Image 1 (cartoon, each protein chain N blue to C red):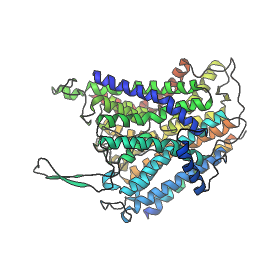
Image 2 (cartoon, rainbow over the protein chains, first blue to last red):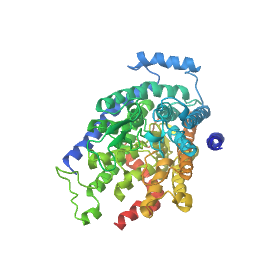
Image 3 (tube, chains in turn yellow, blue):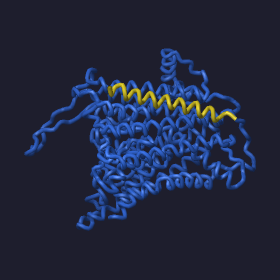
Length: 30
Length: 573
């Protein structure tokens, strides 16, 4: 079970990071 | 301080600063795609890498593509390293027959090495197989350092290029960082370390007889392994994760005064030289020297505090009549937790260098430093690891402070904020503020959550201000991607492994993304010629202003927390 939880947690963080990339891109637009 | 200590500290700074220009100029040539003296050897290998991996090295990326490539590369590395630790018992190069690493420890370690933090909640010689150390940890030492350097170079291109949209190619940048810079330097340093006696072998641990048996034991197990190749890059890449549990206090990892000097030099070498690389790439080396000067002033000031505090000794020992004055027979001062062979000066210098550079390796126990001696390294991390900081990450963190300094100075004197010909506007300020404030939030919220929850308090073995300092240090280390530990905190628990794991992830990637976003914003702007209204950003006044901004942000953010830890502990003595 742990071997699912920890990789999924890492995946969730990187998905959130992708969200941050798109948020920063959106803020950049005039 | 002894004459020997003055000489050692002076020699260290002298050699470091002498190497800045040649290495910095070399790295600038590498990142600008120019020919270097290593090109005849490395260029064919580089081409082969591109051909095998199907890369087109000249294909340019906008900041978003660059950031996504960086994130995907890091995620893949994290999952592979996690998997490797979990199945190491079934893989070769495991002479000690070590079992699988616990899931939460494997997660923490994978995050730690991928994010260039190298916080270690495990003991290397009793947890990691040689294959995991080499294929997992050492490889991540290279690629995580290269990732930081790539992000910096992308940001510099944002300043240099104008009216465009692309900031380079992530894959080319990390390939060149590894092949032209990290691998050659590591090879030279690893051979130098082997010449000093650092072990490099695939043989398992050796059982040896004690010279004089005791009632407890007649023999000892000596842990061995491929240490030199890992130690070299862990010092050069501001990684810091030791092959052995006690890191560079271990005689097989750091056996002689020369190995100690070389390892200390390697900590700051690339971060310092990157300042010159920056100056070269932007076409004005004075800008690079100015940033290096600001970093060096902060570093020397903190070094002075640490050396003074440790050399002053422990008043509790003085009260017992213990002589703590330096003499030809002893180093004097507070020697608890320090190797006798390194003494006060080299222990304090290492502690200051390793925390100023987000390296995190140690040659003494920071937990045993005096309260003020421990405060200085802790505050250096809390300043955001910008003086000198990690390879790449230190300078892009410092450039965020430069943006803030230029913006605030512009507001104060009524000039349009600009840096290197680029207007600094609200978007850059928002991103720079994110880069400065996110680590502060991680550290303070993480520390607060730990001392407020039973799971967090369970790891505190020293209740009171010292225990608070240990928790604050742990989150300062993780949230700023340093990786050193105060020690004394029971951190190999699911709570700390997960909490510190997320602190490391946020501290690395949620700063790298705004840094790349700044690059993406700047690269679209026109380059303005300098005029009489341009704020000079290479003068002693600007250097002082930059130092002030870094210190004020650091003081305002952390003084209350430091008051509950090392400051109150100092006053209680």
